[in-house]
Amino acid sequence: MVQLAEPIAYTEVPEDLRGLAVQRARWHRGLAQTLWKHRAMVGRPRYGLVGMVLMPLFVLFELLGPVVEVLGYAWFVLAIALAFINPTFALLFFVVAFLWGAILTVTSVVADLWTFRPEDRSRGGAKLVVVAILENFGYRQMTLLFRIRGLYDWLRGDQSWGQIERKGHGRRRVAAATEER
Picture 1 (tube, one colour):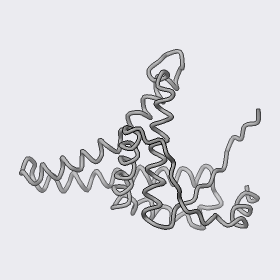
Picture 2 (cartoon, one colour):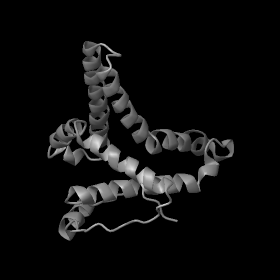
Picture 3 (cartoon, helix red, strand yellow):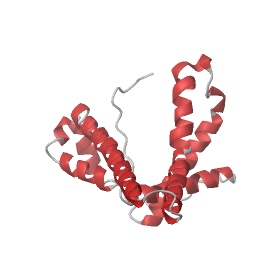
Picture 4 (cartoon, helix red, strand yellow):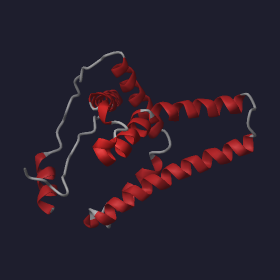
């Protein structure tokens, strides 16, 4: 069996919002299917680190995280509307929460650029950092709803994958990127 230490995988982002919603819901439904199929591994010492740490983390943070985050947003709005929390504190909490999310995302992008793609540091690295910050303001919340839809579909028993129109990456760009490595 051959193993690639640094595998390269490409995915195509749909060109419209409907396609993006279908893709992200499908990815989350696939995560739910995979975790359910391998549920016997969760919390089982015989599976080592994967069973004791990784699988529970995937269930808690990847699978259920979108639900917890959306409920957190709803509770936050409700707490402000019903004056359960001080508006100044609420604003400060909101800013800190978004800054923390942006810091985590930017740190991941910079670590990836520094570790795996030094050639991208000068060309496009700054754009990635800017996008990593901006994605916390609207895009993230939108994709949370898509992911919750995927979980809901899985819970109802929907196993379909649906169709997404694909335009293609452009063979020359993919080949050029592969040859650079």
